[in-house]
Amino acid sequence: MSWQRVLAITIRIIRQIRRDRRTLALIFLAPIVILSLLGYVYRGSSRTITLAVTAPANPLADALVDTLSSLAVQVERLPRDEALARVRSGGVAGALVLEPAGATFALQLYLDGSQPGRARQVLAVVNQAVMRTAIERLPPGLAPAQPEIVYVAGSPQFDELDTFAPVFIGFFAFFFVFLLTSVSFLRERLQGSIERLIVSPLDRAEIVLGYMFGFSFYALIQSIVMVLFTVYVLRIHTVGALWLIIVLTVILTLGAVNLGIFLSTFARTELQVVQFIPLVITLQGLLSGIIWPVETLPRPLQWIARVLPLTWANDALRAVMLRGHGLGDLLLHVLILVAFATLMLLLAMSTLRREVA
Image 1 (spheres, rainbow, N blue to C red):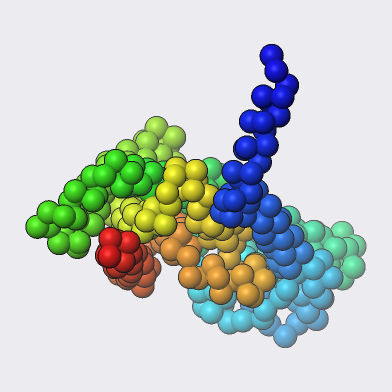
Image 2 (image 1 turned 45 degrees about the vertical axis):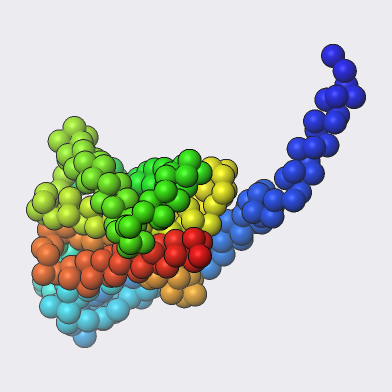
């Protein structure tokens, strides 16, 4: 073995990568951007529990509210109906309703069962506040009232997998369809298939639409298989319509197909396609509500999150599977996903024309 030849190959690879700006950005810039994003999210996100409280003007109720505030709970005193509406919309983690009952008070705690982790956290904090208030304010020997738990969404049977299943469906459907489409379309270009179609009587729009429908056929099958497997094999609890879950997933994957076609026109190798993953997939994985609720992100990142299609898909899938919402409740989400797919389709057509010209 000649170390001189090994060194020559090593130098050639170093020079080759040095001339590829996209690869250099993937090696050095992408990790810094992702680490900076993680640091900004962890340091800038809100970890405070927000709890709606409905209580009369009562010294005991005021003492309980003060105790909750001392436990890093942000309390919003609201009328009962408004408090319950805020729980259903996800605006607060729970609603605590206090009613005088002699020397003590009766408690009703309304929780969102579709978020089991947060529901357990709220219940623990409320129990702690009730016990502390009772020790400090109630006469000796008088036991504090235990909160009556009422779930406004979901149920006590929901677990963490039930919570994450909707976003996993959206994320993996988007990721695999985007990867399949972008690599396959690039391969068609490199093999000359696209060029042969362009010199034929076919219009550019017909070419892009043909590829889109071809890739979408498999995206449709993938969506159906993923949803059915999640619901019937993994036995995920879902309270919404199965057909609506499939429709939302299909619309999302249609956008992934068009995005894959569009971005693949900027790549010349499969490695360059992979370089789009940190931008397209990692960014959405971090900001679309899969790991942290969008509402807890720093304000600038919330604005970015609301532009991402996966954020709207995750919200819609969660609303259907965990809260039982129907199509009428999700028209805005559907329109945004359709608009994203249409925009990517138009960009793909425009880019293909420019590349050929």
